[in-house]
Image (cartoon, rainbow, N blue to C red; front, side):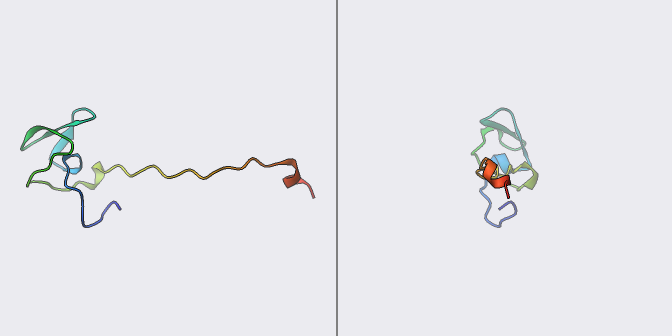
Length: 69
């Protein structure tokens, strides 16, 4: 859930951190840290949370018998 009470305290979700590349963040308080780092100044920013992609539904190909009366 996007707004659940128990948020994983990672720098990738903190308002004080910005992404440098795929694995590193730059924090206003700690400097350059890995994205799994956390500190006591963590403040959750819901806009940095990327929701998982929805699962695709299996699509069946219609046959000619589906369109006949």
